[in-house]
Image (cartoon, rainbow, N blue to C red):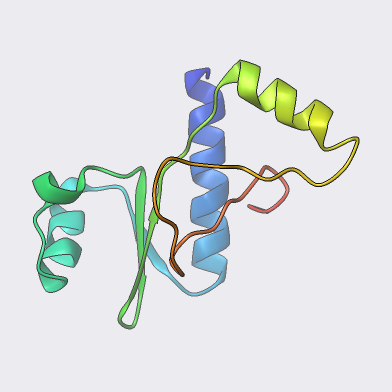
Length: 103
């Protein structure tokens, strides 16, 4: 993914979350404070692109895009619903956003 596309997606997500009333940061020292309140350190969790907070809710945003997969998914959705399968256990704290979701 080109750096510009990554930044554009990140800024779209930031804008949407701020519009929804979240305080959003990409500053590691601010993320450390949020993680500490949840009982973790940044090194345990990793460094997401964005960390958004509102009251006690925390949302971590990681922009993920690869040209081949995006191209394939855009073709697939012309035929029908597309299900994304990931190699982790999804519980209630997971959403997938696309370009048109972060407006």
